[in-house]
Length: 356
Image 1: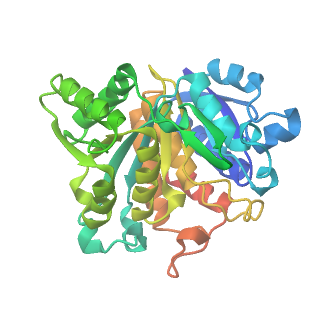
Image 2: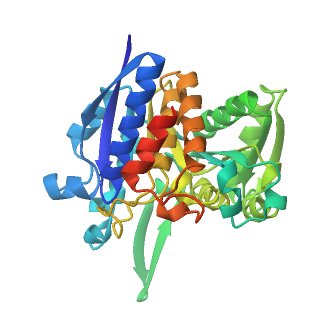
């Protein structure tokens, strides 16, 4: 029987609750499809600061590198907001991405049929459904560029640098093209080439790489127009590839079109099959411990793990189908429907397991 090792970072806030439900689902999928999953817990975020004084201990990096993939809940909370930037929980996220070489962030924005009416976008605009994949470059750009502060003549200023190399652009663009080949063969590259030099290099590189993928229909769009088009006509998009900061913003916008941020999964991939999987929502410390958190985004992240890291596509499809069926039988408070039972975090997880 195949065995997969998973480093588990439960994190802060609702992280432990939603990860526990996801482990139940992974175990159920393994039992049905003939594989085993082994878990090793480690610390990152606020809980790591409390225990070790740093948001990302070296032990956590070592455990993750020795595993086949990483499952992450959520990090952060008001408790640690007054700490300097390099010691805040979010610094652990940037650190682990760099340490594990997680350069490609995949954020699907998919609306399940039972939640179509929960979207702020009218049903007639969404059409037959929403299924967009945002491919975000994750280890370059302004979040990792040179930054600093200065003062001249008593006036303070600060700067953050957007910088990309050709190899950085090439590898993320190829991820976008490869995904487009497996979907509807449409790729939209998003930049700001009318203003930014880094975007001009981005577009030049995309155009050159596109010659390797003649089957894929390539389009280009400025980021401000893309933000508008996602609301105006989201069905026009299939795969979007873009930079770190643009991808951060656009994927959050796309997630809200999908009905609830509590439904959106993500995968952060390195070269090969290794990846880190996490929901895109935060740690929600205001509802931690109340048993009302929605575990479905984390469960859907685990489905991505099954598909991209383990090659267990049948199991991934089964988990996604189980989520769809579960949504027709009950909901957590964030996606409540008066016609359906209101479920706790544990009950939602149990319902997905039952439907696998």
